[in-house]
Image 1 (cartoon, rainbow, N blue to C red):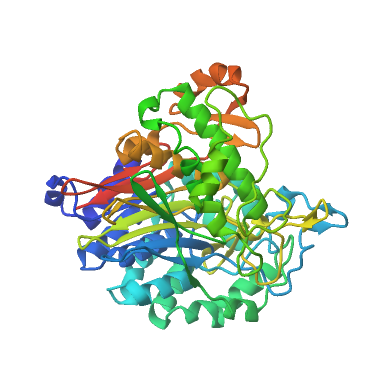
Image 2 (image 1 turned 135 degrees about the horizontal axis):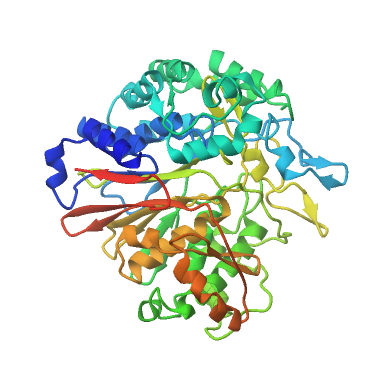
Length: 562
């Protein structure tokens, strides 16, 4: 299946002769070949990385609906050629104005998260179209309408269900069957899930894409499309929403300042609030600057012990301070300051495990109570580079598989509001990530660009998989920079994920080397386990003469260049 999809995608986007060029001078890496092909088609038409990344997101709205789309949100880090730092764009979804801190509370107790996800209450106002429009207006080259053509062709002409999508449909068939719009798309007439290889034609989505291509982004946030979103969430059979037409019309994407920090000989730039993921990535890697990771290498138990300990520290800060900086004070500068992270890293010992990990006290921090979020592992990441040197790194999501399981206008609606911490206060202190009207929930999405000493982008990287995202991105960065692996091999490395004081070695063929290390990690004092993890990363790195792409072998992803 993957081979056939890739062959068709390359045939659509790139002449066969162009594949003889190595390395590539322009490229798109995405979790589905048809999404990557849509981006490359823009590059072939004279577009730049901004055009390519936009067309990729729109195409993935069609063919990867379980993970992302125009019914969700995203975060974009974009490097315009010649710039000293990237610009970042926030398309994170927003809570309706009427949402209160008790949105997910049932009396004194939080609602069961599994029961809170399906239906209207979990849906935030989608941000991807507004984000693309804002970023494209400032950096795009091709006409707005051109970006939509590959997605419209896929929606109207039909696309084949991949094995990954088939598994997601089978896993979500009960909730998808609750509404006719979702059932019609993803289930057979008898209610059984559609199988891999089944062709889906999505004419409602084709019409929505055509309308937004012709009428611009306001076409999405007003009129029939917006009314369809509101009617769907307010009339949901479970957990109806308070969202209004005014909530949808008021949505605005924002350009945010990037969060950058030096790491050894490089500079890492990523997304700031409402993402806490990028800050965690910087924390994980910079807390390890005092250790010679290059000498230790990826086969060392000590390397992975250090990595797990650094995750624990970074995730403790994330839980305490992460949130929407439009509503709560997030001490970003303090959290990524070199002296603060050096002090945090000094807590890590190479020969023993920290007995207890708590959030630190970075400069500018206010008293907060650490509180978990509820991110469900889905999402998608993609990256693009063009021949001029523009670089884009974008993570997009509808949160869990098929988001809220609601469909409006042929597109899946997110369940991002369950990324909020359900309890507004704990231990007498407010939770930074509590629900508030108009607020964006905290995110783990970590689109990142790494620069060399001369200020050139050398790596665009990101991942999908809920709270594992910062760990995946940090692991890939260390793999490329410290261990001198290709971006492909760095992405393929196994992941050791720290969940509080539990170190989890991924249970997969890729994870077998880490699974073998668990007894040694336990001797260092770790509590360990091995479970399947929802990992999916994509990236592009600079090499001599051009670019080389990487796509997660755990996924159906590819990198296509020319």
